[in-house]
Image (cartoon, rainbow, N blue to C red; front, side):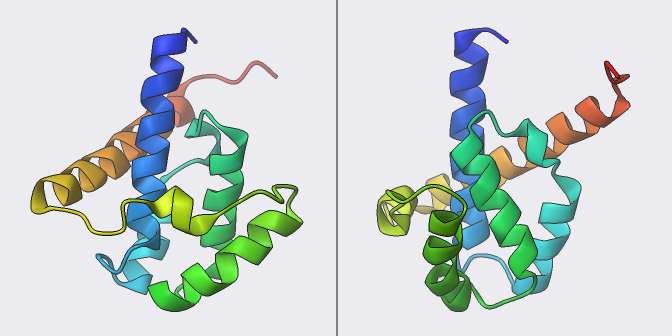
Length: 121
């Protein structure tokens, strides 16, 4: 994968994770979205771990998710993980909200594309 594509996918991943951690979606919706995304679509290992922990927490309220996530990600090998820094900026405009949702839908599309590709096994 070329560096530009990796950069794009990192941004998609970051935006998607910001959306999944936000109060913009209900816990059940978060779980449904997570089930449509393959962890392997994240270009960054830290983002993949964050995603896996969000998925593992299930349908918890976003406030509780944000309380539990830092310790879980730290235990997975990322001691420098700072959720506040990761979620910055915390306030988003309507246009930015749209961008977060677009990123999530793009990762869902990428997940579907990768599922349909034959594996190298």
